Image (cartoon, rainbow, N blue to C red):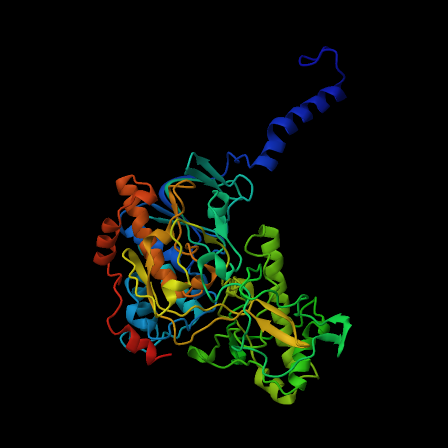
Length: 558
């Protein structure tokens, strides 16, 4: 019998040839170049927002309220950012007085859930809440907007996930092949992957002081804030440098003060713990537990140091357990690969932080080297059954304090944060009301002992400032239909004054407004008139003007 396709070839040769054609024209292109699965969903929308962070969900709500069709993509499945992942106390220094717009609406809803009324006019007030309550209120706000489609637990493809024509993004593709076409795109993540994949210039490191004429960036010559209060020997064999360093300490000296450095401020989990036995998940010993990883804590305690400890600071006796102490769960120097790393690298960094943090709590509760008083401080605390219920009580997100920042024509720097700066920002979209705040970036050996390097916080030389509209957009030569409320164009040190939950929420509303106006006017982001933006922001209640008594407020709340 003659074969129709290859009359002179054997059946095996025919099969091999067909396999070759299949690999060449379908399987390999799909695997290597991100060819879309024809069965995957395809969406057409007006505004596409990547990440449902603090800024992402407010941007989506605002654009939808302005009549725009919005797709909101949240890779964790839980819009709200760190509001729903562990942070509660992020209103300080009297910043409550400038909380406005959707941000104010949310805090009001949260307070009412507890039978309370917000007190925004009181300089020392802040909202205390449980993450699951914040999530409930955010989901209710999103559900009211019929123009919003939320895509959960999906993320951008790393290869060919963004398609541009000239300087304009035409579509993005998610890992499962879902395709989204939009008029305007927004990267509301901290990581800035959409911006990066779209070819927008970004920065991840601590710039040196010389780059923007700053005084607080780069390597810090002296650090007294959250510095070790006691001397801790850093060597595996005490006093012997040749024996190597104990865990959490990085090799290398201080370096040149003010010079750029790849290390960035530490990350942590904002743990929600409880002592309520009916709601408690005990902290288990991790499978990868290594007692040697906690040697620095043993030596610190043996030398008389006092470690951080949980305390009930939320309703129902729960904690907002952060890490800003001389020795805590911040892993200084262990996260510098995260901002520019691929997904596998990011996942490795997050996994290490979780294993280390779980092991640290287990150590503090169980290790015989831990003094009785410290074990008592941690005794009985566990994760909460009613928080992060799809992740066994652990936050789904590590607190990423800094990752990518765009490099635009306009850059916010330390100078904007300084009290002696009288220059007015003429195109403010919201107000940053927080001092430069960057946690330590490294733990090294200095003068023979463990030393934390990098913290900048507080002081009496800072002031609130307006965040310029121009800092939310990339250069026109790079992309014309993307903006960001989270990876704003700023120096490392200035970003430390911006990266606060209420600020992000208000920036998100401003970005959502801009996106809607871009659709209406068919404008590039760089061509949108600030006067049009300001008019809409003011109409929707966002506060753009600094209170006349700002100095009195921060002087009395520092």
